[in-house]
Figure 1 (cartoon, helix red, strand yellow):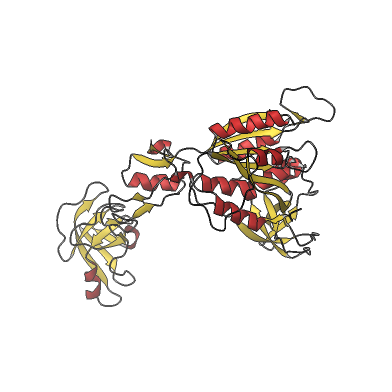
Figure 2 (spheres, rainbow, N blue to C red):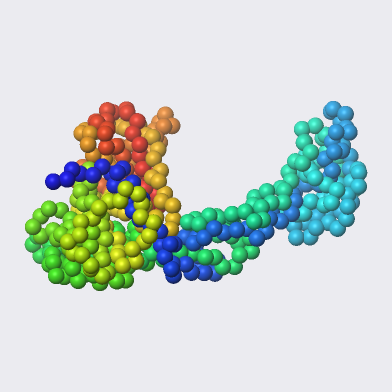
Length: 437
């Protein structure tokens, strides 16, 4: 029996094996910019213009030639004659001469002959004369230079960039009406088990309502993927085999929950070996030790082939196979396994750079028992203590089926593979869950 695979090693293997969709034909589509939110940029976006397109004022004030500041003795003021006004979108048409200034608004083009702006609250205006202190204002102050944000011909947004609000705003500032994006990742999901009830079913002894279907698809929806919901499948090898093959024909990845343990009715791992390949299927992880990763072949060429992890990443995506992630059946174990392993794998598959967990140090309010040899994720609540430092405590019992404790959690305490027990007052890394669930 193979030893349980450490989580960091499993994460590294997934990063090595998975090739993004962007290497496949037909993976790119062009969308109007307002419809591209949440998608992944399919290629580098090259700026067709300078941003900003001209030198402009960073504030409301008066524009003038900064060299005049050096002609004023220390402690004296500089008096300039106001000869016009520059508004955003309405430049002042002319050339400033020595001793002149232009009233200017934020974003307005800097007039010819000017290179410095003094804020309006720093000056005194008497008729057509503006007086300003000569000390403390360097030449070039309060001016945003052409191309300062982005120069024409440079990469504005890299391939793999998630198109969130700021990225869309930057693309819009370039005047781009459409964007090349990776098509939505298609992910099929089904739960397995004879004990699974679908919402609306009558309760029966020994059965439980399917919660994994809703926790996993909700997290998938947050990622912006296209979900193919295949519901719940009984512990029947023929039904499971048919579902795997059906899903492999329409999806880029398949996620299941349940059926990856070593019980007599747990068929997922055996079917993966029959229909495709198994990369690994047991992790040194709590919660979530049973976890299967592999492929389902759309056209089965060798049912008995053994999966060998390559020494280096294979550069070609096998279009005749679909990735399969078999999650454990216990609800919290399924969620933790998804967050720690499946989510970054799907991000890589959809062409994005996986986002590493945001780990912040916090003082643990109580002791925690742990044996080295596995990575543990504990449901917890983190808050700011009376001393202004972050403090964290678990939400109670950590059973892998206790969803209530996951509802109460706003973070996970992450205890590394080789770490031992924690003493009250020790600093521990916590993974903030905001936006992930």
